[in-house]
Image (cartoon, rainbow, N blue to C red):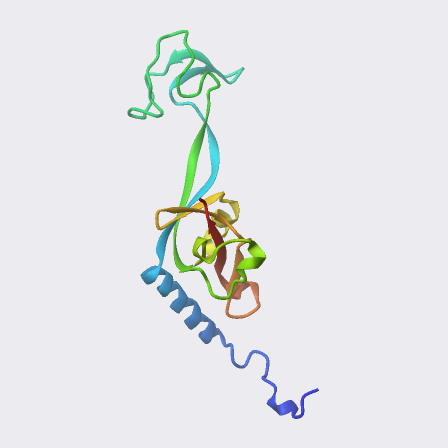
Length: 181
């Protein structure tokens, strides 16, 4: 117990909603003004091949070019002769479509607070990003990140952060990344 209970802070007195809002707006503005583009590589989505006709019962290509293909040129519009395998889907009538998530984030190179020996990495190969909470699904599902033209993988799980302990206070995400060499 403290010497003087009057010296202890009163819960909720200092972290008012207006202070939390000010903090959130300031960090969002920093990310917007000083942040860099971070491109996250997400799991690919599966789609029907636009390049060939298919048998709906089997769900496979019938080996005929679909001239109504809306795409122009490679990689999704490659004419081929009847009876041959579609060069886009290899006759499966299913293609994987690469997905990327592009976000702005502040980037701190070799953050000082990290104990690098715990992770077995060199400081010059580590960055920490801070993004808005709306990037949560993309950052938790991504396999890689491209930051300043370099590829990174997650060194740690992303962490929701904010000013306060309530779920609604957690407005940002910190994540540590290690460079792919």
